[in-house]
Each structure stands twice: as C-alpha cells, then as structure tokens.
Length: 576
Image (cartoon, rainbow, N blue to C red; front, side, top):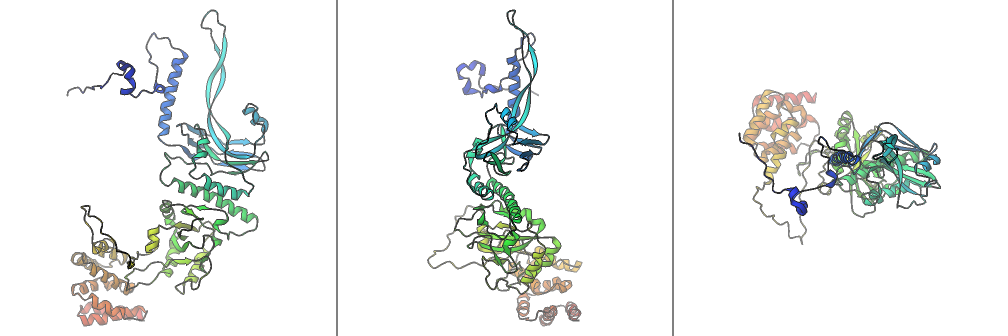
C-alpha cells in the first residue's frame, strides 16, 4: 500500500504578510511549545490555560444557551428570601453554570449586598430588574513571590483562582406602572416576547432566571418565567409560541390563586388580563358552559367549538398546535378555536359515541363527532341531538379546572371542517363548493413532470377493503377469504369500495358473521347498488329491520341459500 501524502497549498510560516489570506489564524488559539531546556514563565502557562478554556467554550456553544435543568427561582415577600434551586445552564459564551446546592439570598441584608458591591448600592431604585446567575472568578489563598534578581524583595500574590457562581440584579429599561402585579406581568409578556432589547442587557457570561419588581426600596413581586429561556441553539422554529405558552401557564395559575383568595370564581374573559394567547393552553372551566352551549373566555367574533379527546392524545395535539401563530385578542380576524375535554379511554368510549352524527348517504360522510358550537351568549338550539345536553353534563362532572384546554385550529381545517385533531372513527370528506359567478375558476397548475393522481386513486389510498376490514374484522377464515377476494378483484374499483362502505354502515354489527361473504357475492353479481337502494328505504331503527331487508332482497337476487338462512336466523335472534 502506497503512502498517502498531504500536499499543502500554502506555507503559513513563509507567507509573511499574506498569512491571513491562506490560513485561519486565531490569536486566542495559541498554545505553548514545550521542549527540554526551555525556560517557562507565567505567561507561557497562562497561554495554555486560555487555550484550553477557549476550546471548552467552543464545545459549549454548539449546544446553544439557556437553562438546561432546574434553577427554579422563587421569592418570599414575608422573609425577603430569594431562593434558587440546584440546576444546570449554559451561557451564550459557552460557559457551563452548575449549581450543586440551594442558593439563598436575603434581599433585606443590605449590609452584605453593599459589601459585595464595594459599597455602591445601599438601596434599590424603583425599577424592573432581571435576576441573573453569573460566572465569576474569585482569587483565593496566598503564595510567596520570590525575587527575580538580587535587588528585588520577596512579595506575595493570590495562589488560586476559584470558579464560582453569583446571583445578581440587572436593571432593565422598562417602566414599572402603577398597576396590579397580575396586569403588569400580562403586559410584559407581550412586550418582552421576541424583544432582543432585554436579552442584550443580560451579561454574556450569565443566564436570566426571572424578573423582579422593586418599589419603595422593597421587592414587590417576582415572575420566574419572564426572561427565562430553556436551552436552545438559535431563535428558530416555534420558540415564540413555546415561550408564550410557558409564561401564560405560570401567570394563569397565579390568576387562579389570586381570584380564589378574593372569593372570585374563574368566570372571566381572557381580555381581562391578556392581550396575547399561545395557540394551545389551559382554559378556565368556569368560563365555559358546555351544557348550555356558551362561552365567555374568547372574543365574540371567535369561532369556538368544544369536543372530547382521549387523555393520551393531549400532548400530541398541543405540540402540533404550537406550530401555529399566537392568538392576538385585539385582532378583528376570525380565529377558530377548539376547547378539548380530556377523558380516559373508558370515559371516551362511553361518552364520545353519544355525540356522533349519523351516516349521511347523500354526502357519503362517515360517522364523526358532532363538535358543539359555543357562542358568547346562549343561542337556541345549541344541541343538535337530544342526548347532547345530558352527555355533556356527565362529561363536565368528570373534569377539574386544570383539565380543560384549548387549541387553535388551522385555517384550512376550519374551512373544510376536517380538523387535524383526531376525534372520530373516520374523517369526513368536504363537499366542493360552487365558485362565484365572477370567479373565472381555478387555473390548472403547470405539470412539473410528476404524476397527477385522479380522485379515485386518492380515495382508495385513504379508504380500501383493508381499512374496512380493520373496522369490521372478519370473524372466521371464510370471512377472511371473502375479504381477500374483494381486495384482489375489486380493490382498485372506487365505486365498489364506496358501496361496500355504505353497506357496512347500513348493517349493524349484529350481522358481522355474514357481512363479508354477502359483500363478496353482491360485488361479484354487481348487485350492490340494488341492495343499497332497498336498504335506504328502511325507516325502522330496530337492528332486525336491516337484516330482514337484506334477506328479502338477497332472495330476489338469487344469493346463496345457506347464507340467506344464516341472515334469517340472526334476524330472529335479534328480534326475540
């Protein structure tokens, strides 16, 4: 194997003045060259310390900056103690800040604060302060300095440099209005969201822990979420929604506590406190009345619905909704909101089926949940089904204040009534609307060379015999054979699949032992349209009515005698 040689394109040493043009030279990345017989000075050793420090911080910068874990900040007005829990953070300079034990600061101990600040600060001015945790180096211990020549005398200097963390206050150029703390914090949420001014005032070798308000030389309140930032590499993605969501939830919890202390219910409008809401968040239960169908939390022009959801799906739905824009309550634009009532799997199975709409044979829409429309004031009728009010009362009795939540719906989903939130057995296909007279109609997009799928191909991709068999599973091997024959012979025929889907919707589950062989025979004889025509004429809601009609029409169509006998036996069993 021949030796692989590296051929440089330039000699940095011989380049002289042109050095910067052919090499990336960073003076901070200079390290000492050691060899036997060399006299080392303090400068040589410090150069290596700086080199290692810079390299470590370069690695730290690749992880981003912000709080990694812990470092929860709290303030007790009665004792004046500012308490910081242990945790880990990364500064924008790549410095790791690790607090191993709880840190307590007494804001009333002005003598200690004055001593730490070289007697410069004996009182706090009225202002808003950012509470930060900062990296500091403290000189400790004493070492003797020996003379370098005969004329010099012995001296002393500090021997060690100890890395430490300090908590401090950074004044912010923001006014502190004469308002209730809750309202001040709500206004600051909008003012500071995405504002780089406050971030630029935080020292680069520190991380922000929260925001403290001081008036009359006394700390008034602390917001531990404002200015706080979790670890992230860049300000990209939906970080504004995530920050607003975190700040909104913290403030809403304090609003609940404050109102409870004053004997007030949580029946209030969002605009009483907020001007900006995250696209997903907690909703006060008292502000919603699902039994009477009205809400008082969102503005009147908002389109608000309510629906149950499985508890296991909540986090997924919230994560997907956080990719949408924040909700501006002052905007006149129509916003579509869905309030969600999380239920366990057992409760969801018990109540959700009572809220389903029936199958519509004209539009061929599958059964799906009937989302209850909520208005700012009660509008009659609010329930499309007679059982809705009673069902919602049962659902409401299972919830607590912290369980109810809301999510913003995408505009496209709101227009087509197909929500991105999976709430039903299937999804309903939107009906195409007629374009206005003055509308010239949609233009055909240019063909980029790819294949354009027709309507039937798209339909079969989402609804086919395999999907139908998952919903109505075959019970025996003969039933599975019937499904396989249907898939092989009619799996590409969208019309047959639609007809089979309607047949399964018209015929109850009591007849599962015979539905698939019957569907196979009807499809082979091209008799499904005739059978469906007769099933649509059945007005009785009794399960035996549909089975009796299938047996009657099947006899006229010449279906298998043994199969029809099984239909009749099931009808008799159901009718008993």
